[in-house]
Each structure stands twice: as structure tokens, then as C-alpha cells.
Length: 143
Ligand SMILES: [Zn+2]
Image 1 (tube, protein in one colour):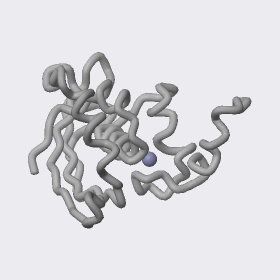
Image 2 (cartoon, rainbow, N blue to C red):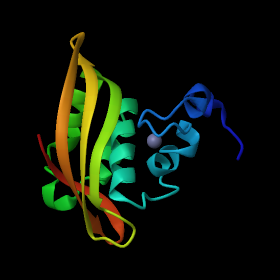
Image 3 (cartoon, protein in one colour):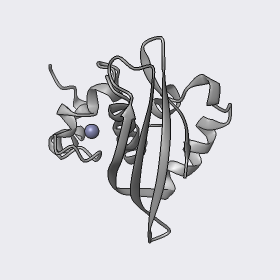
């Protein structure tokens, strides 16, 4: 694949470890999900790719992977306001249930660390995912 001039600042990002914590480079991990070249096969992959999308501030991806049943019309606006205020630091998956290639629903439990206003915070969430026309979507989460 040839790289265009505007892709250049991406190079460092592509070689670096993916923020989602798999140990793979971003290029070999969440990037194809973000560009739409590939679809997450499991709920956990979607969860990880959404975390990376928060990290890289990709509101379009976050909106498109939110299940329409729980997608508020104000979501995009809220993301635009929220994304620049948070620096994500790490993601830790605690457990996954269902959410596999043959499942229609899945749950992922995780903690994520982030800096907000210079303070290190940790969030905990039990997220629910559902397939829509074959693609995993984020439904909602409980803290
Ligand atoms: Zn990743």
C-alpha cells in the first residue's frame, strides 16, 4: 500500500504498540477496524478497538460502533466535547463472556486508566455488546 503525504505523521503511530494493550503494533491490531478494512470478530476486539478510538480521538468510529438502540442523537456532540479532555493511559480486560464469532451477544468487563485535569483516574465497566447485521456493536455499560 502506498502512503500519501498526509499519512506521514501516522508512521510513528503505526509502528507503536496499540493502545488497547494486545502487544501488537497499531498497524497489526486496531487500525483496520478504525479504517473499516476489517470488522472485529469478537466483542472483546470491538471493545479494544473502541478504547483505541477513545485514545486516538476518533469520534466517527465510536458513533458507528454504538448500537443504534442506545445511540443518543447527542452522542457525537458529547464525544467532541469529551475526547480532548481525557488522556487514556491503559486498558485492562478483566473478563469476557460470550461475544465470540458464533455469538449474538457478549459482555466484557474492564478497567481503564486515564488522566483528566492532570489527575490519574480509573474507571470500571461491564459492557454489553450485540451483533447487528453481523457486526459487533456496543450497547451499554454499567460501572
Ligand atoms: Zn488494538
